[in-house]
Length: 220
Image (cartoon, rainbow, N blue to C red; front, side, top):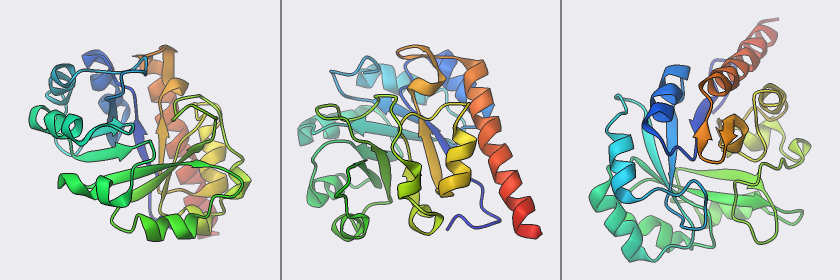
């Protein structure tokens, strides 16, 4: 999927402020993530999320992140917020994930024993899998990287990669794995839930630089 002519897509997650949503779009993000998980410092209410989504132009996807949420919470959120994609970060089954009449992405915290082939089969109805670092007891957003060497370009071509990415390392991550997309949250923040426009700009520029370098190498 992510060959020489494909650019790496970018999602900036944990948006809590309208100015950050606008800055993410201006930087070139393809998607923004809205967290509906009360234990997260980046949690937003449906009303807050609806106001944030209203600032988005066409072709920028609003992604809603949930962690083992009761189905009623997801359904009520969808009644209030026009989300284009759901992202499930807990222990949700494939039947649960597919039950909301929306495309969804299943997050996987990469452990030594993780079998991506089996997970792709289990979540065959998913729009994609998101690979994050594994930290016991924490569903994501830790700012920790996993060992990128575990995913070859052949394995990562249809994956969204997260976990510890920031403007200083994302180019190396893209060059190593060649994923379909990258997902960043804490790596472009000044404080939890407060993004930095200059950090988002630098992150997007680093991804584009890695893509350009790969394209030049492919032409040699």
